[in-house]
Every structure is written in C-alpha cells, then in structure tokens.
Amino acid sequence: MHICFPIVGDSLGGSHISTLILITELIQRGFKVTIVCHCSGPLKDEIEARRLSAETLEISSDIGRRGGLVSYCTDTSRSFRPIYQLLKKIKPDVIHTNDMRIHLYWSMPARLRHTPVVWHQRTFIGKSKLVVATMYLSTHIVTISQSVAGSIPRLYRRKQTVIPNPVEEVRLDSRLVQSANLEMLTNCFVPNTKKSIFIGTFGALRELKKPFIFVDVIEQLVKRHGDNIVGFMFGRDLEGLSDRISRAAQNKGVAKNIVIMGFCRPIEPFMKSCNLLLATSTGDAFGR
Image (cartoon, rainbow, N blue to C red; front, side, top):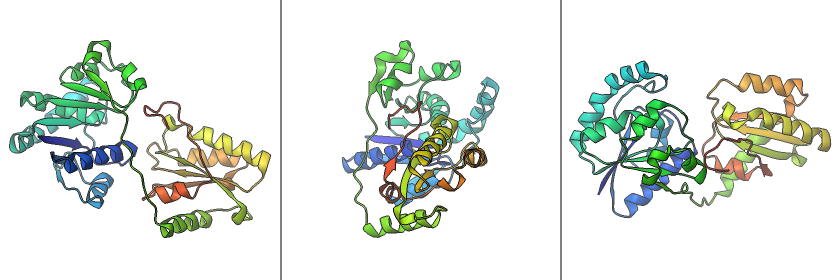
C-alpha cells in the first residue's frame, strides 16, 4: 500500500514528531510512504535528520492562514493544481492528512482522484462551517483523544477512531544532557546556580498554552522558596508573546527567574536537565 503524507513544513512541534514516528513505523512494516512538504523549513530539516525523504511542492506557507470563504477560494485556486498533478504522478492508495491546512486543501483534489482520505484530527474542531463541510470528503477520521472525538460533529462520529499519539523512548547521551544543563546555567541570572531548581515548560509560545500562568507559578514559588527557583520556557514564539512575558515577569519582580529559551533541538536533554516540568495549557487536545 502506498500512503501519501502531505505536510506544510513551516513549523515543528509535538504533533509533527508523532507523525514522523508513525511514518517510520509504517516504512518498517513494509508500507510505501511519500512525504510531501508544501515548503522548506524546520520540519523538512527534521525529516532529513531522521533519514527520511520528502518531496517539496513549493506551495506558499501562507496558504490556509487566513480565515473565511473568500480566502479559502483564493488559496484553493493557488494550491489545487500542483496538488492534483502530484497525486496524478505518484498515484497513492491513501492520503493521510495531519494538519487543518492540509485537511482543507488536499481533501478535494484527493477525492476527485478517487483516493481515500484519512483525516487525522489532532486539535479540537471549532464551529467553522467550512471545516465541517470539508470533513464530509474524508473517508475516515482518526482523533488523538476522547476529548477531540467529542468535538467531532455527530454526523461524522460513525467514521472515526480514537488512536493516541505514538511516542518513542529516547536514550540520551550524557554529554548532550551536560551541554544542555550548561546552556541553562549560562542563561541564569540568579545567585547560587549550583543550588538552583530548574522548572521547565515546553511548547510554542501561544495564548493556548497559558504562558502567563507559568509566570504566576514562578512568582509564587520564588516568594515561598527564594531566588534559587528558575523557570525556563522552551518553544518558538508564534504569537509575539516574548515581550509581554518579560514585562509580566518584570512587574512581578521575577525577571531574573524566568528565561525564555526559544526553540531548542534536540529538546530531550533540556527536559532531562529540569527538576520539574510544568504544563499550564488547558486546551491541548492530547493531555500532557
């Protein structure tokens, strides 16, 4: 069986890693897999780092970023032809979509090619009529948790299956852990760094992840336990929140106790270097 995995490619997060784990397992089990990226970017780099290969369509990463029917029609006119032509060329047996932008712009050309679509839903479904209508084109829907399954319109619940995200055990090189720990110590501005307690939060900086709750928690811990508490925030700033977070920390008197580390790969050594991991999001589809 030949499975096509289309991916945008302009970002890299936990859901993308889960997708690549799934792809690797399918290849090991003898399935033919074609990965297609809309554009080059961090995900394409991760694909190559895992010794996988991918085709690039050079479709703008702006496709699907704007809401509304007019924008959808405009973006469809820009993306339909290259997607359809690729499907005609590679002739996959199944299209496996993993991202809302992929769901919206691959479902129609796939079904016009009479190719089944597995719609892998990794976030909660909102009230968008366009999304609900496009979901009709899917052959089957996979959701990553019972919570996500509950957000699927009743009309489609008979064709859905709940499959939790795959995870993999990572064996860490002690040198990588030491290097990550040193980098964190270097970024500390508190005294007695050898006695510091490192608390980490991991995920893109978005309102969804509730980063300001993390600031509040660090403030309370510093008040109770002293300046040896250091909070590290890992992840790309997708919504321009870094300055607001820094100001909030400054206003609460914990500016030196919060370090915004940005995007770090591999992330596992930094996780290992933390004494405590804190997950503040209340809207993640796959529970932390």
